[in-house]
Length: 158
Image (cartoon, rainbow, N blue to C red):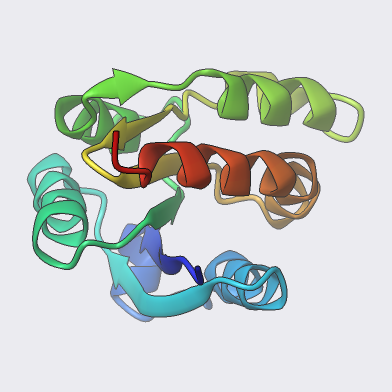
């Protein structure tokens, strides 16, 4: 089965066209090479309700298997991606973000500051990643093999 994927960039500057979304574009390429069908690629502002509504739509209406967000996981007041995600997921799956934070500490000491979370809603897996390109590059390398295993489990009919 080819899983459907969405890449959602959460950034006020990218949403306004003031900054290029290098990280989101990289994620689309990585997921495509890994065999996922990227059916959604959007950029939205750092607004908890907008993020929440987009995640609900991606899971409940569009039935997207894998939703990866980039951005909004840090410490500034507008970083609210984890808060929105927490409201959406039914079960948290902390291992994805733990692995990214630990692995990326070798490259950047700031990776420990990421508050991203991961979890499932129905048959969808949501993973929050930071907006820093190097962290996404290294982080995806670490978690991509486990993403397929998670999707194989949560999409199975029991």
